[in-house]
Length: 598
Image (cartoon, rainbow, N blue to C red; front, top):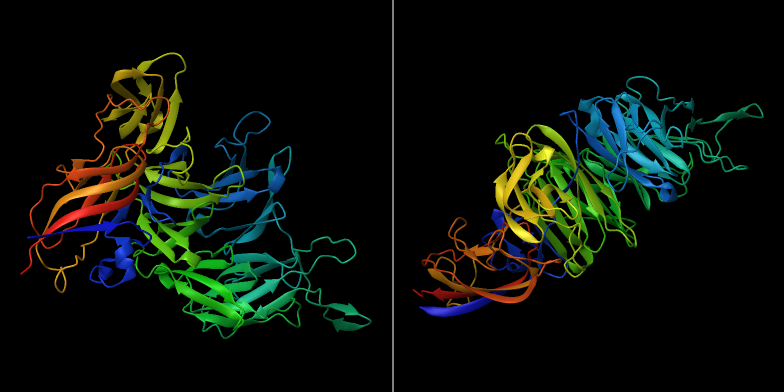
């Protein structure tokens, strides 16, 4: 039996579709994996274990909840929580905005649960504009007392959008105009408000006057509102509008762009720039790109403007991940700080990510299962929103998650292994950190985790997995003064079947995994083996309650060799698993094989 050692030292292609598992000739095969769960492919090549999510709140209602960003610039940023006919506001640090009586501030809305997913919320000049096909357009403004107000918008001119069938369902802002589109009565029509008043600069977003009488004549000025009915969209409804260099409109069978001229009633027009169409998920702009979901949500596409042909070019960035989004894309957000990652919710509630760097050719998909609750059902993500970072803060993904029949609001950051370990980074889901100060205890109470299996770290030591009782109490066999506790989170990788430098091909030939050397960075724990299950071998052995990490994580960087007892088989695949609530960052895997040449 001949011996070969191969190295996997970049994982930028993430999890590949099973349809790709025979493509040993593809560069993506060399940089991909068979399974990628709760790891994130990074721009530099390693796999980074995703951070856990932080518990913000358990909602009283178990129905749909939607999150939206209210960005007032220097006046503050907030996450708006929509539930059935109710709106609340959260600060950046996860605190509810209160009213004058120190109670949670709420606004009564007309939006019922079944319609929340299709709300279009767009910020412009510190004001949130809300449209939906079943409701008259409205706006939310920030004040002092009350802290926020919501008003229904009254329009003037040729369109008032004030009756059923005439409510727009999508919107965008550009050049001082408010663009509205896709009413039930006119699904292919685009309306644009008047430009600001010339002498004062006052916006006229609610003015849809298309002409006026001047010197006895019905006159259309360049500042008047615009109406465009696109009759050649092949009967497909406009699904979204977005401003990215031009006004772009996603329809069911095509993507449209404006003429590129300054928009006036005489010059504004739309033409097809891409075929293939989109679903109703709002497109997102990032850098010079627009990201949108294809028809049925069965693809995720990246488009960018090409000056040479005065149009847009599309790249399907989900070609190797069709199995991950097979139920269809429901929504997504784009995190851009340090690592550019698209976080995607599918219609079945599963969460996935796509690490993206188009210029470097990085397109790496991963799945992020949330596990199962005490009720035996899979915990799923219902909505997403992004709180963008700045020079001092990282991006934060806000999400609502259905766990054991209740909706939770949670937040998540992308870990950055090269940075110093942050005290607020942990690797459990829906977790909290409790500080008892100078006292110590072996019992903690976490109400939102009642009856749930939990994982924890106490005073820098690994605690055994346990189950909270019906009142939320978790009891341990040691005392601590600081604990991070939440749902267990397991990250796991399965490498693809290797192609060894054998005669012809090694595919289908018997191989035996003899040992592996794992190169890791700031890592603890983990197991490896050829079969996923109890026989996995420890990488950095940890004993619950015994391995003292100290005041800061005593993380390991370097090479670790693990002997792997295995039988010869045609696959030669291995699993790498991190089930402990600890960081795990994989740089490379060197695997020694024995190959039976026949």
